[in-house]
Amino acid sequence: MVDRYEGCVVGLAVGDALGFPTEFMSLDEIRSQFGHDGISDFVSYHRFPLGTFTDDTQMSCALAEALLETHGADLETVMEAVAKRFVAWSIAPDNNRAPGMSCLSGCRALSSGVPWRTSGVPDSKGCGSAMRSAPIGLLHHGDLRAITELGQATSLPTHGHACALAGSVATAAAVSLALDGVEPMAIVEQVIALCEPISVEFSRHVSRIPDALTLDSDQALALLGEGWVAEEAVAAALYCFVASPDDYRRTVLRAANTNGDSDSLACIAGAVSGAYNGLAAIPAAWRETVEKSDYLHDLARRLHAAATGGARPD
Image (cartoon, rainbow, N blue to C red):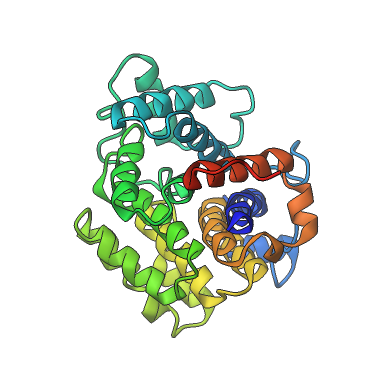
């Protein structure tokens, strides 16, 4: 299980880093620059070195640290810590990797004293809360009630639309189920059922995955959308996972080579595939080269220790 926790945390960062250079490129542009198969490895992007991840991983780590700091506390205490970590992220010097506008807007509101329940953009259903919620599924592994509560709560500081709340719950729940090795389509079905009371719109969109699986992958991703909004990001990421459940590399590269929000798709897909397949499924060169690799491993082990009430593995 420790291996699966590390697979999730490292896996989301690796996917994020692979998708960073392709985030604002069309699929045709990606293939024109990187060849028919698209991006297949870490590449330098502008001034950033190989393996650099984006705000997706930064916010995932900020959320994880807040949850660890307040594990076992009441919701208000947890969310005060989350808000503090999010604001700190928003003004950090390394927040220079195309952060999302709703995330920044929410953090500005938080820093001015707006309560976390109302600081988020009310009608924003961007994927910013879905891209960062994997740590909830790790810390509260097996507790879908806690995942549902925290998934929604941690979306509100930045994204208030019901689809965004459902997206946050969905990523966390998918990670928790993947840790247990639940059959991939069963993960999708449970996510749909869990999120339907939060947003029928979200669950209906994710329900398109079976239809997508009957198409070639380019057509499937065109059906599911570009991922800028939560329902599209989660649906496309889960499709990439379900289409190649035992192959982490194939999953994240398919997600990174897409029209639209490639880094967020690959981040979510990498979290779920990493939790399902474990650390060893991630190519060694990617595990070792991804930014802050040692920290990511340590963070995963601390999440496992907190989740199980045990000592951190050496």
